[in-house]
Each structure stands twice: as C-alpha cells, then as structure tokens.
Image (cartoon, rainbow, N blue to C red; front, top):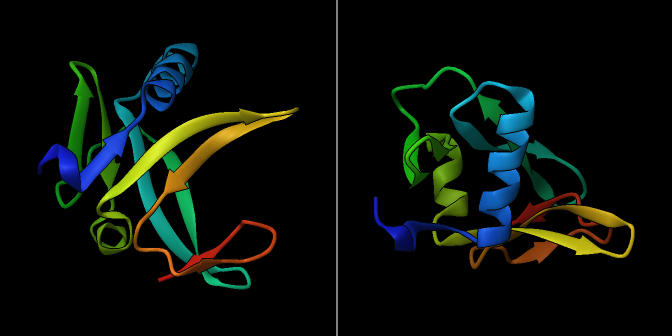
Length: 111
C-alpha cells in the first residue's frame, strides 16, 4: 500500500498511540464499515490485538499501524483520519473523498 491510499494526521496518530499506551496492549486500530443509520454506512474503529491476514496494513510508526478490513477498503481508500476537538466534543473524523453525502447527525454516510 502507498501513503496515498490512506493517511493519518499527526493528531490522529498521537491519539491512537496515547490510547494504546493507556490500554497497555494492541498493535493499532482496525477500520471497518457497517450498514446502519440514515445514509447507509458507518465507520467502525476498534483496537487490534490480533492481526487478521486479509487486512490492508498501513504502518505509521514502528509499533503502530492502521488495519483496514478488506470490505471497508473500497469505501475508505484515499481517506485521511483526523482527530479533532470542537468545543466540548472530540473524536476521530474521516475526510473521505468517496463520500457522496452524510446524514444530518453525522453518524452515517453513503458512497
């Protein structure tokens, strides 16, 4: 995979590394997509404790990577994962050029 296929901002990288360190285990995060919400699809992020051979792997540090479920890859390729703080809210945000629309609550998207 090339860096162009999936990007991680410094803020997102730092947050993932912080969460894994606090947790005390894990190799990174896995990105998947599930069918849900008003627009049809939602991003799913989970810790990776066991690597799945079919995952697309994007290494961002010696001991941290982003693993993308192969079914989700077509939806998220070319995306950037960011970690943002807006007022009292904070969380991961996808900047995905494949999205055609998002629902009003921001929970789901379609391509």
